[in-house]
Image 1 (cartoon, rainbow, N blue to C red):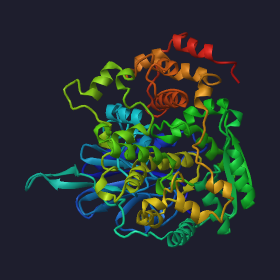
Image 2: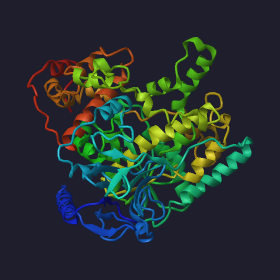
Image 3: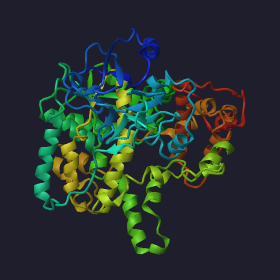
Image 4: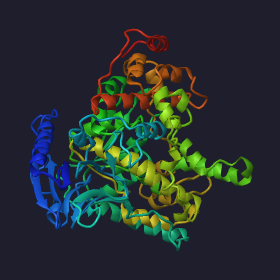
Length: 601
Protein backbone atom coordinates (compact mmCIF):
# COMPACT_ATOMS: atom_id res chain seq x y z
CA UNK A 1 0.00 0.00 0.00
CA UNK A 2 1.38 3.37 -1.03
CA UNK A 3 1.68 6.08 1.59
CA UNK A 4 -0.29 9.28 0.92
CA UNK A 5 1.68 11.74 -1.19
CA UNK A 6 1.29 14.69 -3.57
CA UNK A 7 3.15 15.64 -6.74
CA UNK A 8 4.08 18.70 -8.78
CA UNK A 9 5.73 18.74 -12.19
CA UNK A 10 6.30 20.50 -15.48
CA UNK A 11 6.30 19.72 -19.21
CA UNK A 12 7.24 21.89 -22.15
CA UNK A 13 9.97 23.82 -23.93
CA UNK A 14 12.48 26.15 -22.28
CA UNK A 15 15.41 26.54 -19.95
CA UNK A 16 16.20 23.63 -17.63
CA UNK A 17 18.12 25.94 -15.29
CA UNK A 18 15.11 28.23 -14.84
CA UNK A 19 12.90 25.24 -14.10
CA UNK A 20 15.31 23.96 -11.47
CA UNK A 21 15.17 27.31 -9.66
CA UNK A 22 11.37 27.11 -9.55
CA UNK A 23 11.48 23.50 -8.37
CA UNK A 24 13.91 24.39 -5.60
CA UNK A 25 11.66 27.22 -4.45
CA UNK A 26 8.61 24.93 -4.31
CA UNK A 27 10.31 22.07 -2.50
CA UNK A 28 11.94 24.37 0.04
CA UNK A 29 8.57 25.91 0.79
CA UNK A 30 6.89 22.52 1.11
CA UNK A 31 9.55 21.39 3.57
CA UNK A 32 8.42 24.15 5.94
CA UNK A 33 4.67 23.55 5.86
CA UNK A 34 4.52 22.98 9.58
CA UNK A 35 5.11 19.22 9.59
CA UNK A 36 6.95 17.65 12.56
CA UNK A 37 9.79 16.73 10.19
CA UNK A 38 10.75 18.06 6.77
CA UNK A 39 8.84 16.33 4.01
CA UNK A 40 10.89 14.09 1.77
CA UNK A 41 10.58 14.07 -1.99
CA UNK A 42 11.73 12.19 -5.04
CA UNK A 43 12.37 14.06 -8.28
CA UNK A 44 12.48 12.43 -11.73
CA UNK A 45 13.32 14.12 -15.01
CA UNK A 46 13.37 13.09 -18.62
CA UNK A 47 12.61 14.04 -22.20
CA UNK A 48 9.51 12.85 -24.02
CA UNK A 49 9.78 10.97 -27.27
CA UNK A 50 9.58 14.32 -29.05
CA UNK A 51 10.95 17.73 -28.17
CA UNK A 52 9.48 18.60 -24.77
CA UNK A 53 11.22 18.04 -21.43
CA UNK A 54 9.54 17.09 -18.20
CA UNK A 55 10.18 16.78 -14.49
CA UNK A 56 8.08 15.75 -11.51
CA UNK A 57 8.54 15.62 -7.75
CA UNK A 58 6.60 13.21 -5.55
CA UNK A 59 6.26 14.86 -2.15
CA UNK A 60 6.24 12.86 1.10
CA UNK A 61 7.50 9.70 -0.58
CA UNK A 62 10.99 8.33 -1.11
CA UNK A 63 10.32 5.73 -3.81
CA UNK A 64 8.75 5.78 -7.26
CA UNK A 65 4.98 5.12 -7.04
CA UNK A 66 4.10 1.66 -8.46
CA UNK A 67 1.80 3.01 -11.17
CA UNK A 68 4.70 5.14 -12.43
CA UNK A 69 7.38 2.46 -12.15
CA UNK A 70 5.25 -0.02 -14.13
CA UNK A 71 4.49 2.29 -17.04
CA UNK A 72 6.65 3.80 -19.75
CA UNK A 73 4.28 6.70 -20.40
CA UNK A 74 2.91 7.63 -16.94
CA UNK A 75 5.25 10.10 -15.24
CA UNK A 76 3.00 10.88 -12.26
CA UNK A 77 -0.07 9.35 -10.66
CA UNK A 78 -1.82 9.26 -7.32
CA UNK A 79 -4.49 7.18 -5.61
CA UNK A 80 -6.62 8.19 -2.63
CA UNK A 81 -7.08 4.52 -1.75
CA UNK A 82 -3.38 3.66 -1.81
CA UNK A 83 -4.17 0.80 -4.21
CA UNK A 84 -1.34 0.26 -6.69
CA UNK A 85 -3.65 -0.68 -9.58
CA UNK A 86 -6.20 2.11 -9.20
CA UNK A 87 -4.79 5.59 -9.97
CA UNK A 88 -7.29 8.40 -9.45
CA UNK A 89 -5.27 11.02 -11.33
CA UNK A 90 -2.42 10.56 -13.77
CA UNK A 91 0.01 12.40 -16.03
CA UNK A 92 1.23 10.78 -19.25
CA UNK A 93 3.65 11.83 -21.97
CA UNK A 94 3.27 10.56 -25.53
CA UNK A 95 5.53 11.94 -28.24
CA UNK A 96 4.84 15.70 -28.22
CA UNK A 97 1.77 15.47 -26.00
CA UNK A 98 1.06 15.81 -22.29
CA UNK A 99 -2.10 14.09 -21.00
CA UNK A 100 -3.61 14.93 -17.61
CA UNK A 101 -6.44 12.60 -16.59
CA UNK A 102 -8.84 11.74 -13.76
CA UNK A 103 -11.17 8.82 -13.09
CA UNK A 104 -14.94 9.56 -13.14
CA UNK A 105 -15.65 9.46 -9.37
CA UNK A 106 -13.34 12.44 -8.79
CA UNK A 107 -11.46 11.16 -5.75
CA UNK A 108 -8.19 13.01 -6.36
CA UNK A 109 -7.99 16.54 -7.84
CA UNK A 110 -5.52 17.48 -10.57
CA UNK A 111 -4.61 21.07 -11.50
CA UNK A 112 -2.61 22.73 -14.25
CA UNK A 113 -1.46 26.14 -15.44
CA UNK A 114 0.66 27.51 -18.26
CA UNK A 115 3.75 29.65 -17.63
CA UNK A 116 5.41 30.73 -20.86
CA UNK A 117 6.04 27.49 -22.83
CA UNK A 118 5.61 25.14 -19.89
CA UNK A 119 2.61 23.40 -18.41
CA UNK A 120 2.86 23.04 -14.64
CA UNK A 121 0.65 20.40 -13.04
CA UNK A 122 0.02 19.34 -9.44
CA UNK A 123 -2.27 17.19 -7.33
CA UNK A 124 -2.75 20.05 -4.88
CA UNK A 125 -3.74 23.65 -5.59
CA UNK A 126 -1.43 25.00 -2.89
CA UNK A 127 1.59 23.62 -4.76
CA UNK A 128 0.77 25.68 -7.85
CA UNK A 129 0.08 28.74 -5.71
CA UNK A 130 3.75 28.61 -4.73
CA UNK A 131 4.73 29.51 -8.31
CA UNK A 132 1.90 31.99 -8.92
CA UNK A 133 3.28 35.50 -8.47
CA UNK A 134 0.08 37.41 -7.66
CA UNK A 135 -2.87 35.00 -7.43
CA UNK A 136 -6.23 36.61 -8.18
CA UNK A 137 -9.63 35.24 -7.22
CA UNK A 138 -11.70 34.02 -10.16
CA UNK A 139 -15.10 35.73 -10.08
CA UNK A 140 -16.84 32.90 -12.02
CA UNK A 141 -15.41 30.43 -9.48
CA UNK A 142 -16.55 32.59 -6.56
CA UNK A 143 -20.03 32.75 -8.06
CA UNK A 144 -20.07 28.99 -8.62
CA UNK A 145 -19.04 28.45 -5.01
CA UNK A 146 -21.90 30.67 -3.82
CA UNK A 147 -24.36 28.58 -5.84
CA UNK A 148 -23.09 25.07 -5.07
CA UNK A 149 -20.82 25.30 -1.98
CA UNK A 150 -17.95 24.01 -4.15
CA UNK A 151 -16.11 25.43 -7.16
CA UNK A 152 -17.32 23.71 -10.35
CA UNK A 153 -14.64 22.21 -12.58
CA UNK A 154 -12.76 23.07 -14.70
CA UNK A 155 -12.69 26.29 -12.69
CA UNK A 156 -10.57 26.83 -9.61
CA UNK A 157 -10.85 29.81 -7.26
CA UNK A 158 -7.64 31.23 -8.75
CA UNK A 159 -7.42 32.85 -12.17
CA UNK A 160 -5.07 31.07 -14.54
CA UNK A 161 -5.21 27.71 -12.74
CA UNK A 162 -7.56 25.05 -14.12
CA UNK A 163 -8.82 21.76 -12.75
CA UNK A 164 -9.10 18.60 -14.80
CA UNK A 165 -12.74 17.53 -14.65
CA UNK A 166 -13.48 13.98 -13.40
CA UNK A 167 -13.75 11.45 -16.22
CA UNK A 168 -11.81 13.63 -18.65
CA UNK A 169 -8.31 14.07 -20.01
CA UNK A 170 -6.68 17.42 -20.69
CA UNK A 171 -4.26 17.19 -23.61
CA UNK A 172 -1.51 19.70 -24.28
CA UNK A 173 0.66 19.52 -27.39
CA UNK A 174 3.90 20.91 -28.76
CA UNK A 175 2.92 22.14 -32.22
CA UNK A 176 4.13 24.31 -35.09
CA UNK A 177 1.76 27.22 -35.75
CA UNK A 178 2.97 27.10 -39.35
CA UNK A 179 5.51 25.03 -41.23
CA UNK A 180 9.03 25.80 -40.10
CA UNK A 181 7.96 27.83 -37.08
CA UNK A 182 9.34 27.07 -33.64
CA UNK A 183 7.35 24.69 -31.46
CA UNK A 184 4.82 26.12 -29.01
CA UNK A 185 2.88 24.54 -26.16
CA UNK A 186 -0.87 24.57 -26.86
CA UNK A 187 -3.59 23.19 -24.52
CA UNK A 188 -6.37 21.40 -26.42
CA UNK A 189 -10.08 21.07 -25.64
CA UNK A 190 -10.57 18.48 -22.85
CA UNK A 191 -11.82 15.09 -24.00
CA UNK A 192 -14.27 13.01 -21.99
CA UNK A 193 -13.13 9.40 -21.81
CA UNK A 194 -15.98 8.15 -19.62
CA UNK A 195 -19.75 8.67 -19.78
CA UNK A 196 -22.43 7.61 -17.33
CA UNK A 197 -25.22 6.31 -19.59
CA UNK A 198 -28.30 4.08 -19.45
CA UNK A 199 -27.77 0.53 -20.69
CA UNK A 200 -29.72 -0.54 -23.81
CA UNK A 201 -31.04 -3.69 -22.06
CA UNK A 202 -32.43 -3.53 -18.52
CA UNK A 203 -32.58 -6.09 -15.73
CA UNK A 204 -36.25 -5.96 -14.80
CA UNK A 205 -36.59 -9.08 -12.63
CA UNK A 206 -36.12 -8.08 -8.99
CA UNK A 207 -34.75 -11.40 -7.77
CA UNK A 208 -32.04 -11.53 -10.44
CA UNK A 209 -31.08 -7.91 -9.80
CA UNK A 210 -30.87 -8.49 -6.04
CA UNK A 211 -28.60 -11.52 -6.43
CA UNK A 212 -26.33 -9.73 -8.91
CA UNK A 213 -26.09 -6.69 -6.64
CA UNK A 214 -25.08 -8.79 -3.64
CA UNK A 215 -22.26 -10.33 -5.67
CA UNK A 216 -21.14 -6.96 -7.07
CA UNK A 217 -21.04 -5.41 -3.58
CA UNK A 218 -18.87 -8.23 -2.25
CA UNK A 219 -16.55 -8.00 -5.25
CA UNK A 220 -16.27 -4.21 -4.83
CA UNK A 221 -15.06 -4.67 -1.25
CA UNK A 222 -12.74 -7.53 -2.17
CA UNK A 223 -11.01 -5.30 -4.72
CA UNK A 224 -10.20 -2.83 -1.95
CA UNK A 225 -8.62 -5.26 0.52
CA UNK A 226 -5.10 -5.06 -0.94
CA UNK A 227 -2.25 -4.59 1.55
CA UNK A 228 -4.33 -3.88 4.61
CA UNK A 229 -2.34 -3.07 7.76
CA UNK A 230 -2.13 -5.49 10.67
CA UNK A 231 -4.11 -3.15 12.92
CA UNK A 232 -7.88 -2.79 12.42
CA UNK A 233 -9.05 -0.63 9.53
CA UNK A 234 -11.44 2.19 10.23
CA UNK A 235 -14.93 2.67 8.83
CA UNK A 236 -16.87 5.91 9.11
CA UNK A 237 -20.21 4.71 10.43
CA UNK A 238 -23.19 7.06 10.52
CA UNK A 239 -25.76 4.34 11.11
CA UNK A 240 -27.20 5.02 7.65
CA UNK A 241 -27.66 2.34 5.02
CA UNK A 242 -24.51 2.98 2.96
CA UNK A 243 -21.87 3.09 5.70
CA UNK A 244 -23.57 0.21 7.53
CA UNK A 245 -23.44 -1.88 4.35
CA UNK A 246 -19.71 -1.24 3.97
CA UNK A 247 -19.08 -2.16 7.62
CA UNK A 248 -21.06 -5.39 7.19
CA UNK A 249 -19.18 -6.36 4.04
CA UNK A 250 -15.82 -5.79 5.72
CA UNK A 251 -16.83 -7.98 8.65
CA UNK A 252 -18.07 -10.67 6.25
CA UNK A 253 -14.69 -10.54 4.50
CA UNK A 254 -12.93 -11.26 7.80
CA UNK A 255 -11.38 -7.79 8.16
CA UNK A 256 -10.68 -6.40 11.62
CA UNK A 257 -12.80 -3.26 11.82
CA UNK A 258 -13.07 -0.30 14.16
CA UNK A 259 -15.96 2.09 13.54
CA UNK A 260 -16.01 5.86 14.06
CA UNK A 261 -19.09 8.04 14.34
CA UNK A 262 -19.88 11.67 15.12
CA UNK A 263 -21.67 12.77 18.26
CA UNK A 264 -23.18 16.28 18.22
CA UNK A 265 -24.75 15.95 21.64
CA UNK A 266 -28.33 16.77 22.56
CA UNK A 267 -28.57 19.79 20.23
CA UNK A 268 -28.76 17.73 17.01
CA UNK A 269 -30.84 14.92 15.57
CA UNK A 270 -29.24 11.88 17.22
CA UNK A 271 -27.60 9.51 14.71
CA UNK A 272 -24.99 7.88 16.95
CA UNK A 273 -27.56 5.48 18.51
CA UNK A 274 -28.07 3.95 15.05
CA UNK A 275 -24.32 3.63 14.58
CA UNK A 276 -24.14 1.92 17.98
CA UNK A 277 -26.92 -0.46 16.95
CA UNK A 278 -24.99 -1.47 13.83
CA UNK A 279 -21.72 -1.82 15.73
CA UNK A 280 -23.39 -4.07 18.32
CA UNK A 281 -25.00 -6.16 15.58
CA UNK A 282 -21.66 -6.62 13.77
CA UNK A 283 -19.72 -7.02 17.05
CA UNK A 284 -17.20 -4.28 16.24
CA UNK A 285 -15.93 -1.47 18.51
CA UNK A 286 -17.37 2.00 17.99
CA UNK A 287 -15.52 5.24 18.75
CA UNK A 288 -17.76 8.26 19.24
CA UNK A 289 -16.09 11.51 18.25
CA UNK A 290 -17.59 14.44 20.09
CA UNK A 291 -18.26 17.57 18.04
CA UNK A 292 -18.83 20.72 20.08
CA UNK A 293 -18.85 24.43 19.23
CA UNK A 294 -15.46 24.77 20.89
CA UNK A 295 -13.91 21.99 18.79
CA UNK A 296 -15.53 23.37 15.64
CA UNK A 297 -14.10 26.82 16.33
CA UNK A 298 -10.57 25.55 16.87
CA UNK A 299 -10.56 23.44 13.69
CA UNK A 300 -11.89 25.96 11.14
CA UNK A 301 -8.50 27.15 9.88
CA UNK A 302 -6.84 23.74 9.85
CA UNK A 303 -9.84 22.32 7.99
CA UNK A 304 -9.67 25.08 5.37
CA UNK A 305 -5.98 24.33 4.80
CA UNK A 306 -6.63 20.58 4.59
CA UNK A 307 -9.45 21.01 2.07
CA UNK A 308 -7.15 22.95 -0.30
CA UNK A 309 -10.22 24.30 -2.13
CA UNK A 310 -13.15 26.12 -0.52
CA UNK A 311 -15.89 23.62 0.37
CA UNK A 312 -18.86 25.22 2.10
CA UNK A 313 -20.86 22.30 3.50
CA UNK A 314 -21.29 22.21 7.26
CA UNK A 315 -19.94 18.66 7.53
CA UNK A 316 -16.38 19.66 6.67
CA UNK A 317 -15.06 20.40 10.16
CA UNK A 318 -16.91 17.44 11.78
CA UNK A 319 -15.39 15.14 9.15
CA UNK A 320 -11.96 16.67 9.76
CA UNK A 321 -12.32 15.80 13.46
CA UNK A 322 -13.53 12.31 12.57
CA UNK A 323 -10.53 11.60 10.33
CA UNK A 324 -8.25 13.08 12.97
CA UNK A 325 -9.55 10.64 15.58
CA UNK A 326 -9.30 7.68 13.21
CA UNK A 327 -5.71 8.53 12.26
CA UNK A 328 -4.60 7.88 15.84
CA UNK A 329 -5.44 4.18 15.46
CA UNK A 330 -5.40 3.21 11.78
CA UNK A 331 -3.88 4.05 8.40
CA UNK A 332 -6.84 3.01 6.21
CA UNK A 333 -10.38 4.34 6.41
CA UNK A 334 -13.45 3.04 4.57
CA UNK A 335 -16.60 5.07 3.98
CA UNK A 336 -20.02 4.68 2.41
CA UNK A 337 -19.73 7.67 0.11
CA UNK A 338 -21.23 7.13 -3.34
CA UNK A 339 -24.23 5.09 -2.25
CA UNK A 340 -26.69 7.97 -2.52
CA UNK A 341 -25.46 8.82 -6.02
CA UNK A 342 -25.61 5.23 -7.29
CA UNK A 343 -28.95 4.21 -5.82
CA UNK A 344 -30.99 7.43 -6.13
CA UNK A 345 -31.01 8.55 -2.52
CA UNK A 346 -33.61 10.71 -0.84
CA UNK A 347 -32.49 14.03 -2.35
CA UNK A 348 -34.01 12.99 -5.71
CA UNK A 349 -37.58 12.95 -4.39
CA UNK A 350 -38.26 16.71 -4.69
CA UNK A 351 -37.02 16.72 -8.29
CA UNK A 352 -39.18 13.73 -9.18
CA UNK A 353 -42.23 15.38 -7.61
CA UNK A 354 -41.51 18.61 -9.49
CA UNK A 355 -41.16 16.69 -12.76
CA UNK A 356 -44.54 15.04 -12.24
CA UNK A 357 -46.12 18.44 -11.48
CA UNK A 358 -44.55 20.02 -14.55
CA UNK A 359 -45.88 17.23 -16.75
CA UNK A 360 -49.38 18.03 -15.49
CA UNK A 361 -48.94 21.83 -15.56
CA UNK A 362 -46.75 22.52 -18.63
CA UNK A 363 -47.70 26.21 -18.79
CA UNK A 364 -45.95 26.91 -15.49
CA UNK A 365 -43.26 24.27 -15.83
CA UNK A 366 -39.78 25.07 -14.57
CA UNK A 367 -36.76 23.74 -16.44
CA UNK A 368 -35.07 20.73 -14.76
CA UNK A 369 -31.78 22.63 -14.69
CA UNK A 370 -33.39 25.40 -12.66
CA UNK A 371 -34.97 22.85 -10.35
CA UNK A 372 -31.62 21.14 -9.88
CA UNK A 373 -29.97 24.46 -9.02
CA UNK A 374 -32.48 24.92 -6.22
CA UNK A 375 -31.50 21.59 -4.61
CA UNK A 376 -28.18 23.10 -3.51
CA UNK A 377 -29.99 25.58 -1.21
CA UNK A 378 -27.26 28.18 -1.41
CA UNK A 379 -27.14 31.73 -2.80
CA UNK A 380 -28.35 31.25 -6.37
CA UNK A 381 -31.01 33.87 -7.05
CA UNK A 382 -29.77 36.26 -4.37
CA UNK A 383 -26.85 37.74 -6.29
CA UNK A 384 -27.84 41.41 -6.08
CA UNK A 385 -28.31 41.14 -2.30
CA UNK A 386 -25.08 39.22 -1.70
CA UNK A 387 -22.22 40.54 -3.81
CA UNK A 388 -20.54 43.94 -3.94
CA UNK A 389 -21.50 46.14 -6.87
CA UNK A 390 -18.19 45.44 -8.63
CA UNK A 391 -18.57 41.66 -8.40
CA UNK A 392 -22.27 41.77 -9.23
CA UNK A 393 -21.52 43.75 -12.38
CA UNK A 394 -19.25 40.94 -13.60
CA UNK A 395 -21.82 38.28 -12.73
CA UNK A 396 -24.72 40.14 -14.36
CA UNK A 397 -22.71 41.16 -17.42
CA UNK A 398 -23.10 44.88 -16.73
CA UNK A 399 -19.49 45.54 -17.76
CA UNK A 400 -20.05 44.51 -21.37
CA UNK A 401 -19.31 40.79 -21.11
CA UNK A 402 -21.82 37.96 -21.19
CA UNK A 403 -23.57 37.35 -17.85
CA UNK A 404 -22.61 34.31 -15.84
CA UNK A 405 -25.22 31.56 -15.82
CA UNK A 406 -24.66 28.71 -13.33
CA UNK A 407 -26.75 26.45 -15.57
CA UNK A 408 -23.68 26.17 -17.81
CA UNK A 409 -21.93 24.16 -15.09
CA UNK A 410 -24.83 21.68 -14.95
CA UNK A 411 -25.72 21.20 -18.62
CA UNK A 412 -23.36 18.37 -19.48
CA UNK A 413 -24.29 16.39 -16.38
CA UNK A 414 -28.02 16.84 -17.05
CA UNK A 415 -27.76 16.05 -20.76
CA UNK A 416 -30.83 13.85 -21.43
CA UNK A 417 -29.27 12.12 -24.45
CA UNK A 418 -27.38 9.71 -22.16
CA UNK A 419 -30.35 8.66 -20.04
CA UNK A 420 -33.46 6.63 -20.79
CA UNK A 421 -35.43 7.99 -17.85
CA UNK A 422 -35.57 10.70 -15.22
CA UNK A 423 -33.89 8.71 -12.44
CA UNK A 424 -30.92 7.78 -14.62
CA UNK A 425 -30.62 11.41 -15.65
CA UNK A 426 -30.61 12.54 -12.02
CA UNK A 427 -28.17 9.81 -10.97
CA UNK A 428 -25.81 10.76 -13.79
CA UNK A 429 -25.98 14.40 -12.71
CA UNK A 430 -25.39 13.64 -9.04
CA UNK A 431 -22.42 11.40 -9.84
CA UNK A 432 -20.86 14.12 -12.02
CA UNK A 433 -21.65 17.07 -9.76
CA UNK A 434 -22.27 16.56 -6.05
CA UNK A 435 -20.29 13.32 -5.98
CA UNK A 436 -17.20 13.88 -8.11
CA UNK A 437 -16.82 17.64 -7.55
CA UNK A 438 -17.70 17.85 -3.87
CA UNK A 439 -18.12 14.73 -1.74
CA UNK A 440 -15.20 12.61 -2.96
CA UNK A 441 -12.39 15.19 -3.38
CA UNK A 442 -13.42 16.68 -0.04
CA UNK A 443 -13.10 13.28 1.66
CA UNK A 444 -9.71 12.64 0.03
CA UNK A 445 -8.22 15.96 1.10
CA UNK A 446 -9.43 15.63 4.68
CA UNK A 447 -8.08 12.06 4.94
CA UNK A 448 -4.71 12.96 3.42
CA UNK A 449 -4.30 15.80 5.90
CA UNK A 450 -4.16 13.13 8.61
CA UNK A 451 -2.00 10.65 6.70
CA UNK A 452 -4.90 8.33 5.87
CA UNK A 453 -5.80 6.53 2.68
CA UNK A 454 -9.54 6.43 2.07
CA UNK A 455 -11.44 3.65 0.31
CA UNK A 456 -15.01 3.93 -0.99
CA UNK A 457 -16.43 0.55 -2.10
CA UNK A 458 -19.47 2.15 -3.73
CA UNK A 459 -17.06 3.94 -6.09
CA UNK A 460 -16.40 0.73 -7.96
CA UNK A 461 -16.70 1.13 -11.73
CA UNK A 462 -18.21 -2.32 -12.51
CA UNK A 463 -20.78 -1.83 -9.72
CA UNK A 464 -21.58 1.75 -10.75
CA UNK A 465 -21.99 0.96 -14.44
CA UNK A 466 -24.16 -2.07 -13.59
CA UNK A 467 -26.67 0.20 -11.79
CA UNK A 468 -27.45 1.82 -15.16
CA UNK A 469 -28.95 -1.53 -16.22
CA UNK A 470 -31.75 -1.13 -13.66
CA UNK A 471 -35.21 0.39 -14.30
CA UNK A 472 -36.38 3.27 -12.14
CA UNK A 473 -38.87 1.18 -10.15
CA UNK A 474 -36.01 -0.82 -8.61
CA UNK A 475 -34.56 2.39 -7.17
CA UNK A 476 -37.77 4.04 -6.01
CA UNK A 477 -40.91 2.15 -5.00
CA UNK A 478 -43.55 4.48 -3.66
CA UNK A 479 -41.84 6.55 -0.98
CA UNK A 480 -39.05 4.01 -0.49
CA UNK A 481 -35.77 5.14 -2.02
CA UNK A 482 -32.75 2.86 -2.68
CA UNK A 483 -35.18 -0.05 -2.84
CA UNK A 484 -32.91 -2.55 -4.61
CA UNK A 485 -29.99 -1.84 -2.27
CA UNK A 486 -32.22 -2.39 0.75
CA UNK A 487 -33.44 -5.69 -0.64
CA UNK A 488 -29.85 -6.79 -1.33
CA UNK A 489 -28.57 -6.08 2.21
CA UNK A 490 -31.65 -6.71 4.35
CA UNK A 491 -30.22 -10.01 5.62
CA UNK A 492 -26.89 -8.39 6.51
CA UNK A 493 -28.16 -5.68 8.88
CA UNK A 494 -30.90 -5.00 11.42
CA UNK A 495 -34.25 -4.29 9.73
CA UNK A 496 -34.58 -0.94 11.51
CA UNK A 497 -31.32 0.24 9.93
CA UNK A 498 -32.21 -0.98 6.44
CA UNK A 499 -35.76 0.34 6.24
CA UNK A 500 -35.63 3.50 8.35
CA UNK A 501 -36.22 6.87 6.72
CA UNK A 502 -33.10 8.62 5.46
CA UNK A 503 -31.88 11.74 7.28
CA UNK A 504 -28.84 13.86 6.49
CA UNK A 505 -26.05 14.62 8.93
CA UNK A 506 -27.56 17.01 11.45
CA UNK A 507 -24.93 19.63 12.24
CA UNK A 508 -26.83 22.21 14.37
CA UNK A 509 -25.17 25.19 12.72
CA UNK A 510 -27.95 27.74 13.11
CA UNK A 511 -28.36 27.05 16.82
CA UNK A 512 -24.61 27.20 17.40
CA UNK A 513 -24.07 30.37 15.36
CA UNK A 514 -26.77 32.20 17.30
CA UNK A 515 -25.38 31.02 20.62
CA UNK A 516 -22.02 29.38 21.30
CA UNK A 517 -20.43 30.20 17.93
CA UNK A 518 -21.83 33.72 17.71
CA UNK A 519 -18.38 35.30 18.11
CA UNK A 520 -17.15 33.35 15.07
CA UNK A 521 -19.79 35.06 12.96
CA UNK A 522 -18.55 38.47 14.10
CA UNK A 523 -14.91 37.47 13.69
CA UNK A 524 -15.03 35.95 10.20
CA UNK A 525 -17.87 37.99 8.71
CA UNK A 526 -16.98 41.33 10.28
CA UNK A 527 -18.56 44.05 8.07
CA UNK A 528 -15.30 45.99 7.96
CA UNK A 529 -13.44 42.95 6.63
CA UNK A 530 -16.10 42.19 4.01
CA UNK A 531 -16.06 45.83 2.90
CA UNK A 532 -12.25 45.78 2.54
CA UNK A 533 -12.32 42.45 0.70
CA UNK A 534 -14.64 43.99 -1.87
CA UNK A 535 -16.46 40.82 -2.91
CA UNK A 536 -19.48 40.67 -0.59
CA UNK A 537 -21.86 43.27 0.77
CA UNK A 538 -20.61 44.34 4.23
CA UNK A 539 -23.86 43.60 6.09
CA UNK A 540 -24.43 40.21 4.44
CA UNK A 541 -24.23 38.18 7.64
CA UNK A 542 -26.69 40.50 9.36
CA UNK A 543 -29.13 40.09 6.46
CA UNK A 544 -28.84 36.32 6.71
CA UNK A 545 -29.45 36.23 10.46
CA UNK A 546 -32.47 38.55 10.24
CA UNK A 547 -33.98 36.63 7.32
CA UNK A 548 -33.76 39.67 5.05
CA UNK A 549 -32.31 37.85 2.03
CA UNK A 550 -35.49 35.94 1.25
CA UNK A 551 -38.10 33.54 2.50
CA UNK A 552 -36.11 30.42 1.63
CA UNK A 553 -33.19 31.26 3.93
CA UNK A 554 -34.75 30.45 7.27
CA UNK A 555 -34.12 27.92 10.04
CA UNK A 556 -31.32 25.50 9.18
CA UNK A 557 -30.55 27.43 5.98
CA UNK A 558 -29.31 30.38 8.06
CA UNK A 559 -26.53 28.26 9.54
CA UNK A 560 -25.69 26.72 6.18
CA UNK A 561 -25.24 30.12 4.50
CA UNK A 562 -23.20 31.53 7.37
CA UNK A 563 -20.94 28.48 7.20
CA UNK A 564 -20.57 28.86 3.43
CA UNK A 565 -19.36 32.43 3.94
CA UNK A 566 -17.07 31.59 6.86
CA UNK A 567 -15.33 28.78 4.98
CA UNK A 568 -14.68 31.16 2.08
CA UNK A 569 -13.05 33.61 4.47
CA UNK A 570 -11.01 30.84 6.09
CA UNK A 571 -9.87 29.60 2.67
CA UNK A 572 -8.85 33.00 1.33
CA UNK A 573 -6.80 33.83 4.44
CA UNK A 574 -5.32 30.39 5.13
CA UNK A 575 -4.74 29.07 1.59
CA UNK A 576 -4.69 32.11 -0.69
CA UNK A 577 -2.90 34.02 2.11
CA UNK A 578 -4.92 37.19 1.72
CA UNK A 579 -4.75 39.44 4.78
CA UNK A 580 -8.09 40.20 6.42
CA UNK A 581 -8.04 43.97 6.85
CA UNK A 582 -10.49 46.58 8.05
CA UNK A 583 -11.86 44.80 11.10
CA UNK A 584 -14.07 47.00 13.25
CA UNK A 585 -13.88 46.59 17.03
CA UNK A 586 -17.60 46.82 17.76
CA UNK A 587 -20.21 46.62 15.04
CA UNK A 588 -23.91 46.11 14.58
CA UNK A 589 -23.42 42.46 13.58
CA UNK A 590 -21.65 41.61 16.84
CA UNK A 591 -24.35 43.37 18.86
CA UNK A 592 -27.07 41.55 16.93
CA UNK A 593 -25.61 38.10 17.51
CA UNK A 594 -24.69 38.94 21.10
CA UNK A 595 -28.31 39.77 21.92
CA UNK A 596 -29.55 36.46 20.50
CA UNK A 597 -26.95 34.30 22.24
CA UNK A 598 -26.26 32.91 25.64
CA UNK A 599 -22.98 32.51 27.49
CA UNK A 600 -20.14 30.93 25.53
CA UNK A 601 -19.02 27.41 26.43
